[in-house]
Image (cartoon, rainbow, N blue to C red; front, side):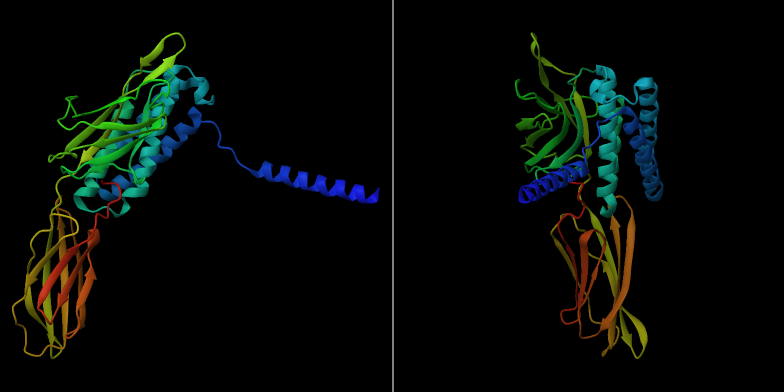
Length: 366
């Protein structure tokens, strides 16, 4: 009898332990208007700080628009703000989902854009601002209105802007109510800022309620500007079949073509004094993964003990950054890192300055 009691106690203890373990598991709370308004205000403050540090007018405008969205949502929800969004009427429900999408897009931008240089940084900021603007001004609502909260590459990198080109691009739209498995695939079209269909049109390759995968067969073209994707989904309603829902829009910025100018200043150390050897501009870097070189004529002094080299990088949007000078023994190569994933090398043996461009370092630009 005692053995049976011990077994029962042990089993009871294990059950209690399992129950305690289950009790510590956390379930995400249901989305409410209050929660989204709080997130909007935090996102506004964080984006305003980033706009001030970068002196970017488009980010400043986007920050103010987030604040306006919070005010409008607070006013429209009234005493329903604490209610789960799923229980709200159609217009309030969609307003909460669009505001939450703006928050998600902003938070992703803030996490992604830190290391982006020059025109890529500008393109990302413009892409975010254009997207928030469309979410803020969107109209039409039903319970199944599609909402796009983000765009990403097929390997799940967030995308805010595209590099121009004619090679195929595969993207995925992330959001809610983007497709209904009981209805045909949603229609996705590419339009310009004025709503005109572009020559390059996407092809839907897969669709789920939370994800649409598509391909742009000819890339994003050669001109910079806003690239808008319009989603029209159908939803099956009782006794009504599949009916079209209000459109959802998401915007991407096509970045200017890459152009980075690099100049250098080389000096030799002769008897403790720095003597100019050469300076100049290398051929512009106009593509990722390329190399730019320049020969340096003999000069300075016959037997230098050391060399020192500095560089200046100027991006396509006019912003610039200087690095160095870095000094090294006259018989050793000098290699230094530059912004945007560039490196500069000086080889005394070949008297060559080389600038190499790595792959794209800006994660938010495809």
